[in-house]
Image (cartoon, rainbow, N blue to C red; front, side, top):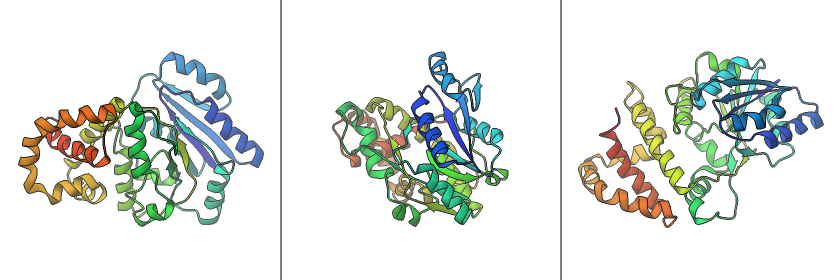
Length: 298
């Protein structure tokens, strides 16, 4: 009934696989595991092979990005529904798989999104930026997510009907971090696919440093710029991405943002990197950086 699809890149998935295997056995669920290693180092491949030798497991020769790895999972899966999980999540509910299987049986939706949660205790200041952003902006309850079902779509924990991929695929041109979920959500909306947002979260145990998350932020903005330049996509992106909506509303202020950027971007980055910030500061940083990158991104 359900294929558990996990793209892997430089991550130890043994504990995650053991947790899921235990749930499959204890509930006698009809599940298969489909795992695609996206060019990890040999160190991680050696760790994971022992846990994956009884499952469908493919090692790609080089890193092609998460979209390519997810599309390969789709090709390998043989069930009607697919559960996609990020490799670095933690499953905390013993009924995690059962909740999905029960909803699939009862409602047969196109997509189910389970959500994510973050630790309640703030991490050390060097890791604070990713935790703060995720806790405030991503860890939303299902009622809030269902109000904007397509804008709230996230790829780290969702179930999808395999037939959806007859017309929608993960965009493999987005090789780096950021907004692949935004684009997939837009495509789901255009196809009028139904999305159920439920309370079945995974625990996101991020250990990214502030510097690493700032680098990923740059990658995400570069992806966003490339997407908004595609014909017929910009208006959908403005509706889906708050940063673009704000940017479009205040387009007359763009010359000012550009002028301020040269001075404020390094200053804001200094404080963000060291963990002394508010999320409003981070929003301003992204807004200024967006204008700067628009002039540089080919």
